[in-house]
Length: 229
Image 1 (cartoon, one colour):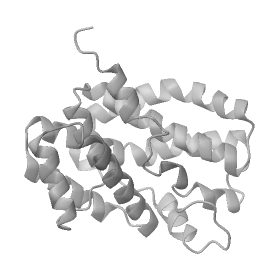
Image 2: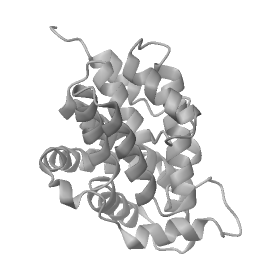
Image 3: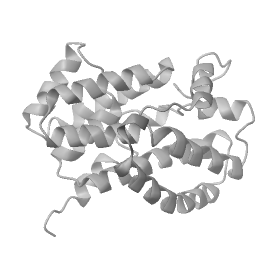
Image 4: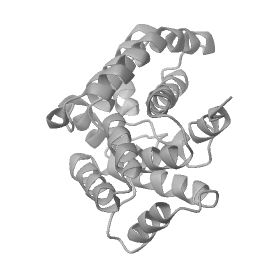
């Protein structure tokens, strides 16, 4: 292989990477407690809508923008994107989750990537000049690891989908095979979303799913919680 990026791609997008992703449901727990998501069909619909109406216009697009900014070696642009990401995450738990995951991701990969852009970004986070959101860190790491942009986006969507499916299996609960059925159905949808994200108009980035934001905010006040968000 000319560019043997497969191993680096799998490592970066591994759902078991020790950054704490397993402790966040990203609002799903609220939907389950309200009985809005309660079976395989409703879980599948929730995940598809989340990927299509939320992730596409927010985190996945920021992965692409951060990747492209890194390609231009534009540190200031990365900081601006990170600050924009903070402003768009209205729900406190989601904002904090994104920051925690991003900081932990950087902690893992900065040990392997001796690159000025990574060190400057990490230093800005330590000085509280920026937040270090997961999607920004993911795009930056992917570029520095030599992973092509299209594969980077696919792995980000796939990683997000795996997390939502796993949480659905645990929370509803669903059978393990039900979860795998959903993952098979999601693959052509993810491929389509990657294409759309590569072509998305910059003015559309940041569109908010108000319903999801509300459920994420309500999660803070649930009487019983298994997840941090």
